[in-house]
Image (tube, rainbow, N blue to C red):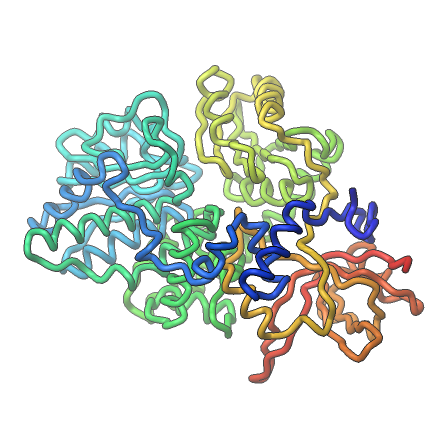
Length: 581
């Protein structure tokens, strides 16, 4: 049943409110804890029990950090790291080219630097080498190093690990493992098949951080002191959000603490990147995912593969500034390339239908560096898992993004095992694949079938999930601060979205390019401002601009607008529907 009777909003969506049992749980929590009802609605959606509510609002790493030794091979991996650092061995770090890989590499480089030790950084070229270790690179690194640490990759790299003759190999990863593991000294991965999956939500940087926690414990047991790990949490936070890891459990605590560290502006690379992106407020999870993350990623997508990792580990502000400027420039170029591919992919996917269990598109010469972003856009538009593939010669290289509750990585791995893909792997929310051109249609048909069995395609693409009703007078800065304590919000824990019912539009003004500023009130004196980005590109903006005195239900997320040192409440407007009250 639709919320407030809205079957079709101004943007064509059906509004879905909290289920009756969740509404009752939120009401009981508000009575028991005396917390604001809007906050309790958010906590109830996140599955927080009444008795755990107050503790949930103040998560601590001390309480939530798991024992690193609960992961297989962890003690051996940490011991080998400690020995290599102490003996000044020659160490190479082989990292993936995305934010998670770059941050994981920077964590290890930082840890070694604090001990006066250097390491060789190797990041494969996305186009020339593809994802993960390859035989030639691993053999070359092994000839010149005693230890190779693969981060955010390597779990399926049997051949390349075997090619690393003469060097020990450690793998610190989170991608889904196969039935057998490479012959490495240690494979630390919460998504190995022989793990229980309790820590499967960690990104690679989270796994690396746990390895460094264990290394520090071993160093203390030997009578020494390890490097300062708390100062590195900014990197873990960035990777966790950018890799779309669910913000629950220890991930939530890592990101919260990491944001505090980042606000202290102690890492030259992130300071330079924040400044060039004109980030003039304390960083939030949104900034990590949509401002900083894409810029760090830009080098691996269309430029120099190791640029992001080099920036994150850079200690010289002048060098960091130059790298940040280059990444910002590459990000602009990436946007242009993405725009072209996105338009073509959307047209193709719409022609196929956006209501299938899988939304997919494939095109000639589509840049492999942007197919993942375009897949993400298709996923958001259709509320379905999405795959986008760039074809070149006899093969296609693609990337996929999933929705909550659908394990895309497992389905892709199954497809590879069945021989429909040349290779493929990933994790629940994201995956990569290589497919022969002549098997493309068969592979996508089989993938659609596998995802349908998991329940993909059952949610309406036009559903807008809402947490409840809020009146303008209740939307205070204090309430926003209280709700923020239930965050940070992101993958697996979306920010709460409330409806302001039956409100009167006071003023409407177009701002920027296609955006709309709206003032509204309840007719009793309380009023709020709202901003609707891109509203004039669709039906939402014109309908509100030409309101003609009609009243509306307005839906969106509360935020604090900071301007000239003043803080005010603002609604980030997502949708609206005429009020028939």
